[in-house]
Amino acid sequence: MDAKDILRLKVRLLTEGATLPESEYSGRKGGAGPVGGRYFVLPNGRHCGIPIRRGEIAKRFGSALLEPTEDPAKWIYDGGIEIKAVARPKFLNGMTADGIPYQQIALLHCHSTLATTAYQACKYWECGTQCKFCTVPTSHLRGDTVLDKSPDQMAEVVQAAEKDGIITDILLTTGTPDTPDMGGERLVAIIKEIREVSDLPIGVQIEPPMNREIIRELSRAGANAIGMHIESADGAIRKEMCPGKYEYGSLDLYRKSWLYALDYFDRGNVSTFILHGLGEKVRKTISLAQELAEAGVVPIVAPFRPAPGSQLSDFTPTYVGKLEESLKLYQEVGNALHKWNINPSETLAGCHRCGGCSPIQEAYDWTASRA
Ligand code: SF4
Image (cartoon, rainbow, N blue to C red):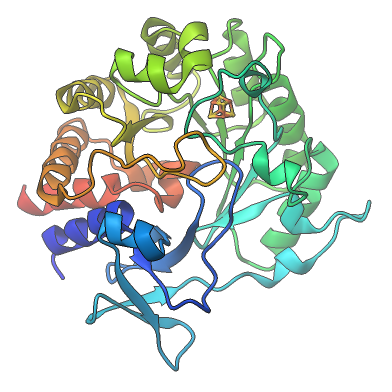
């Protein structure tokens, strides 16, 4: 497969998803980031967190069949494309010294990113202004995870995963507590503890704190990459879909925070998610992606994935049935990244290091193949 075919495959998988035989596991049902998916390795060796859809929903999204074979690693997508399943790592069977299963503290994203949501709640849920796509508290409420991960617990899981040779980087995200640091101080404490046992790159994700010095503190504690997520480039969509975040932080606040972060983190190690498929004006997404790439900030444009337990669980994303339009969007993003020399694979840690939820690496590769 050439770069064009791989980009098409990844955009198809991330927007249409895939349907599995009934007996197969569909992936986790709550928590941060895209849920309801499983990780596979594509023919280019990169990873994809494929949304698993069934029944009427699969029909609505046009999801093709993904079938297991006699070899547990080998799967066949849409009758002919061979992809490989990522196996569940053994270290997740362990338990912390205080008796908490490792898998309630952190999970593996793709094959090598250890990720946790340090604080599994958010102030916006408490006043009903949460992001409409969010499921951050649901995994804790179901008993699948711990509300507040301690620095000790996280350092212990990192050590176990590193000892098994599984992980290459660490991602710490957080729901937003009702404190001015937006959760940054909790992340600083966790990073310091991890740095006692590991030198692996660490990526963090927070809302822009009013006191920007928290960003500097995260860097000084040992974080290597930071994401502050605007979620949509279209102000009207941000207002509708993320009412709490919208009221708190203007695009101007995000711009200032990204630029401030570039004083402490290298180009390509400051990022923001920009969701695709919420009804936004696509030209606004492209325009912001171009502005960010020029500045050295990675625009992680990614298809929005409706999650059970969120307010948008039954929402049909605007990309459904529009594969060619989606491809054009990602090609524009790839052009912007390539023009400003932002190669997502060169980031040290975080979501675009993993790359399972976004086709921007494949878009960058597509542009590079034509240069
Ligand atoms: S800021 Fe939005 S996406 Fe993040 S945890 Fe809060 S409600 Fe969820």
